[in-house]
Length: 431
Image (tube, rainbow, N blue to C red; front, side, top):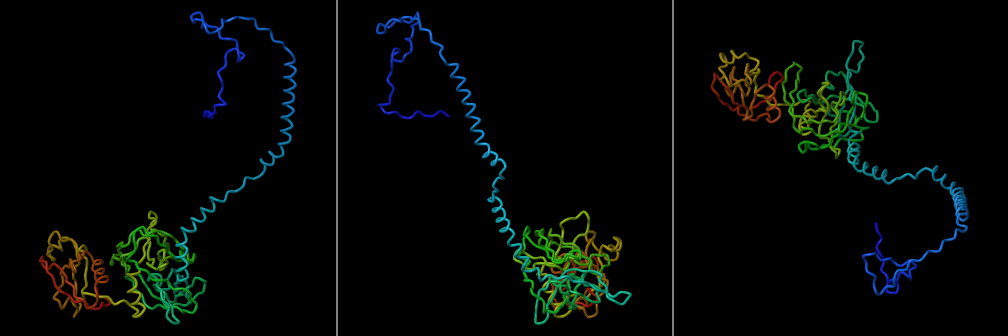
């Protein structure tokens, strides 16, 4: 960029000089240009020849001196340049320090949440009698210490983790193994409650609120994957808060209950069952229960919402079982019958293809007292559609209570009718 001229004062201004004062020969006018009367006529003079003195000699002397000076400077500067090239460059700590600080701040809540719950998660070992007489380990899972009362501590786990056990062992986070006692089991919700000696229990999980969960919220699964990696932590998000999943509770190959679960992409592997699903505050918001075990499926895990599990846990702890309401009927799904039977025997309209068929009634049950009969086809309870046996159990187990009266809508001989039925306590062989 051009440098702007600096201002000059009047004393520094350059005076205009004539050709004679500047030392240059006067300008010769062209033929067309008239000679000014105020200018002297141009006189052409011969320039005296310049003398060639000792210029060449001086040039060579200067050249040699320059070369010698450059060599001396190079010899003096070389040690410094060599040290500069071989010395390691100073390490910059600015970027590293900033990155470390940011990472620590971002992970602080996660680490803190794990520390609030990790010691409350235990390993549960299922021991069953063998032909040799001694109990042998047949499986393992996880559990969560959710309560401590006097000399007892209470552990919630999955029913399938303790199913068929002749004895159970619970291993604390520090490796201490304790004998466990089953207080109650519930195959429907896949839950069981155990009791252990509380002397060495150092932490109890804090109960959260699963109803406030939001899709995308960060959650952590803590458990015992594969039965060998105790207190492993995996991280994910809530994929869906209320996902309805059909389950086969009695292993007869038919779906007989629609359970509402939390869906998460946190890794839940075999052995994680019964472990804790917690939020970033370290609160227990779910009991890890099942995982779709297909090679083509990744990141789909399920947990029982703690708000659904708590009433069942209390019943199991206090009563050893869950007392649920029932209509007092034996049933089959409409879809189990051929279309001809539906039209000829049940007299169903052609557009009614789903529901449950009453095939028997319990003496003195609410359904019998209300006037229900065999071959009645139930399609609604309190306005909720009943398409299958799983729907009926979901309505009764989730929303109703023993002693409550519900409105049952059904078809009888092709006519749609309704009756008020008082629910009684569930017996072992009826729904």
